[in-house]
Image (cartoon, rainbow, N blue to C red; front, top):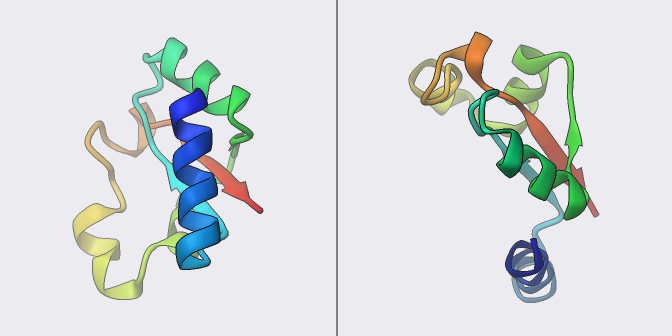
Length: 79
């Protein structure tokens, strides 16, 4: 959690990145809790959120995630 917070702080201060998305397996409860401790919020509308964060040219290749949309948790953080 602390390493993730430091990375986000660095990306924001050095590169100006203020929106983040992370998509772990729904079964990885420990990772999800860690991301939530770092400030990420679990979202219900996965497809809409993914479309907002991914560039259109990547939607077809990456929108399903590694575990399929049903088995992928979607968490976001906006600074």
